[in-house]
Each structure stands twice: as structure tokens, then as C-alpha cells.
Length: 625
Image (cartoon, rainbow, N blue to C red; front, top):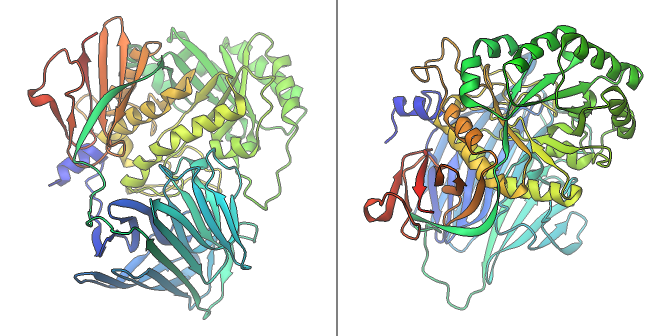
């Protein structure tokens, strides 16, 4: 059983997530968490990742409603849930949602909600979100029923779809297993689906209220908003198997696969605000030995000539390569702006090996139905960059996330490499959702490769905290160290959770043949070193330090895939370096995991060939060559 002390070591906070309540109705199971349903499964096979009733504010932040009058009844073959959720908005506005959830064996699961405000309530979205899983579902057949009565036989997108694959929806039906289908009906409004893999969420999301409609919008005072979700499982097997509640063996088996490649270079981001702290911590930087430093420069944030003097001081301490990330204002003639930056760099004695340049405005998302912001053609931006920095590699892409790169595909011919970031807390910030984003990464990298071929490819900075919010006016302050979406600080960055996330991240992107991967800074809220008032370790090093240092040491060595029988629990990869071969294993869950290593040739034999991993533990084991 986890204690508060364990929680602080693992998650960087003493706060423990509330354990979900398991609900059962015959062969159907679901977890009740914060009033919503997670991991809805039939005979242990995930049918829906979630059905949630969510209320978003004007910056797309998610309200955490107060739940009252909660009653949960679990019978032999049925369950029911009732409660009231209350959201408090700006200017003393409020919204109350009455919720009823029920299911019984052989009958549909029903989730219905009535929302009403006595004051009127501003929101970007108020209603149901339904998440379909992606593993085993992407690219498979699906039937979509539209609000105007048409039924269409189609497929879930395989490569990540930049815009909504399905619109005007009233129901969607997919295959759960052979001769078993699930129909999810949606009532009370018009629904549409977006491919959440754009944001590295491991799901397709069906949500209420089309994005083409204006937002934020008002729920009028006294008006009731009624919605209803009905999940119906059709089991057409002649003789169904006995019901189970677990789709996986408790023991994870690891086997070496055939795919191989080279480990990416490891980068670290440096901002003008943190440059002095990086200089003071230069002995630690030298200990980690990252291959790349990524310097961030944003004139709109007040960065000017002084930033380059600070960058030059850091660069002199770093024997590796460096890249300058420029958020170009595009307010003056492009050549004037880029030449001014080149002059400031030259005067400071700072010359990076590469530059990533992108219009500042392109960091902001352009949702469906929105007007594209004013921006010079990217061809002109890249031409100006080549003219101002004639002997430096020029890269492009997006300084934000894959979503923006997928929706505004940059011309790659003038570029030496493509880059983008990811962030795991755009839509949800609970522990399970954050780790599940790892499932989406292979789809992201495969989609980038489908667009840009073998163009050199970089990812990062990609951290658990969010450095910039493309979907609202700001990132969310998090003074209490909670688990909240779009937060500029996150407690888990300080714990073993972040180390496990980083190692799992690497395991999932190896196939992409990345030129460089950036997962952290050295100092600050995205850093490897804790502040003076953050006693996470005796030497002030966050556990993520161990992962980044190890990965930097592996850069350029050969990797080999390692197949996991339970990839939602344990991930692994093998490396071969001059110092020997090793197996890198990470538990990406909050529970102990047992790993069968019997099929692998280990330098040091383990008792019975079984390794027990503690929650979010990352470790390495020597392999025989």
C-alpha cells in the first residue's frame, strides 16, 4: 500500500490520487474516477478508454467540479451511480450537473447528465467526451451514424488525421473482438470526433458541440442542457467464453526483436531566464554530457541582445553542438528581423551549429472553423533565415506540438531538419492518462515520416509541464502542485514518475531514427536540478537526472527492439555499446510488475529469471553479447 512518503518520492507530491471504484455488470467492467468512467472493458478487452462529462473554461482549462450526494450501488450483475457536480466560474457564476450512470448484464450502459445554471455560465465546451483506444483500433473498420440519419462504413484513421475524421455524429460502432461489437450512441447535441493522437493522447475523442461554432459561449440562466450516452455491446458469438476481468497475464515477458538503429543525441533546453543558473551548474552539465544545447529566443517575451551574451557564456562551457530556437515576430520585413538577430549573435560571440526558425504566431493553434492568423509565407521566412545565417543549418517545423505541424505542413525543401514538441497534459493530467500518451508516440513519428520522408527529424523540448499553451492565452499556474492539465509546473517532474516517463518515451520513439531528442532543461521548472526549497534528493538532483544522463551516454550506440507482452505496463529496449550490451526496462505503472527474463541471455542470472519492478522503476541489466 502506498504511503504519503512513497507518493512524494514517486510523484513529487504527498497527494495520492483517489483509487477508482471498479463497477461490474456481467461481462462489462468500468472504473469510476472523479465522477467519470475510465477503462470500460468487455471480458477484459478495453471497449472505451473513457466516457466523461467535462466543462472547459475560456482557455480550454478543465474545471474540477465539487461532487456531492454521491451514491454508488453495486449488485450481482448491475450497478448504478448518482451525484451532483458543481463548477464555480468567474464573477460568482456557477453550474450544477446532475448525473446518473447505470448498467446491468446484457443491457446497455447509460450515462446521462442534466446541466443547469442559475447565473448563466461561460464555457468553451460543456458535455460528454468519449475516448476510443488506439492500440488495436487504429485503421480498423467502423460504422458512423450521422445526426441526419446516414450510416457510413469507414475506418478509424491510421496515420494521424489533422482535422476531424467524423462530423455530425449520433452513434459510432466498432469491433471489440471477433463477433463482438460496441455501439456508442450520443444524444442531446451534435457530436464530432478529433484524432487526439495529434496531442499525443492515446485516443480518438468524440466530443459535444462542433468546433466550428463560436466559443466561448454562454449557457443561459435557468436553461437545462440534457445529454445522454448509451453504450450497447452486441455479442454474436455462438458460445461466449467465461467472463474474465483481466485481459493480460500478471507476468510480463520480454523478448528481443529484430529491429535495430542508432540511439538519438540528447538535447537540453536553455532559456535566457535560466542561462546564469546553467553557468553556475556547469560541473553538473559536464557530468551529464548532453550532445546538444537548445537555446530558446523569443523577442515577444522580451529577449534581446543580452540573451546572446548569456547564451555565449553557456556555449563556451559545452563541448557539444548547439541550436538556436527562434520565435520570429514577423512584424517587420523578414530580412530586417533575421539580420538584426544575426548581428546581435555576432556581437555577443554566439554562433550555434543550427537554427530552428518559426513565426511566433504559428505556436498558437488554429482550430477547425477558425481563421488562420496573418503570417508571411513560410518559404519567405526560410529564405530570410538562409540569407541572414548563410553558414548555419536551418531547421523548421513547429515550436509547439505535432498538432500544429500536422495542420500547417511546412515546406521541407529549404530545411535541413524538421522539429516539433509534445506534451502529455494537454487534455488530462491524471497519472494513467499521462503514461498512456506514450502509446501515441509511434503514431506521431510514423505520421511525420509519412509527410517528410527521411528528412532529419528532432523532437523536443518535450516535458511533463507545459511551457507554452497553443490553445489558450496562458499556461495554468499550479502553486499547490496538483495534477492539472496545461500547467506550467507539474509535481511528477520531480519524482520517479518523470524518470519512468522519459525512459518509456525513448522506447516508443526509437523507430523514428531521431537526430536529437530533448526531454528537459538543466535548471528551472523543466530542469534536472531541484531548487533550494525542493528536497527531492540529497544532492538536489531530480530522478529524471538519472535517465537523461544515461541516455546521453548511450547516444550513437546501437539499439535493438525488445518486445513486451504487456506494453501498457512494462517497456524495454536493448543497447550495444563499447562497454557492453544492456537491457533497459521501465515499469510505467504505479503497481509492482513482475518481468520474465527467462528467454534473454543475462550476464548475471536472476533467481528464476523473474525481475520485480517497483512502481515507476527504471533499471538496466547487463546482457551477454
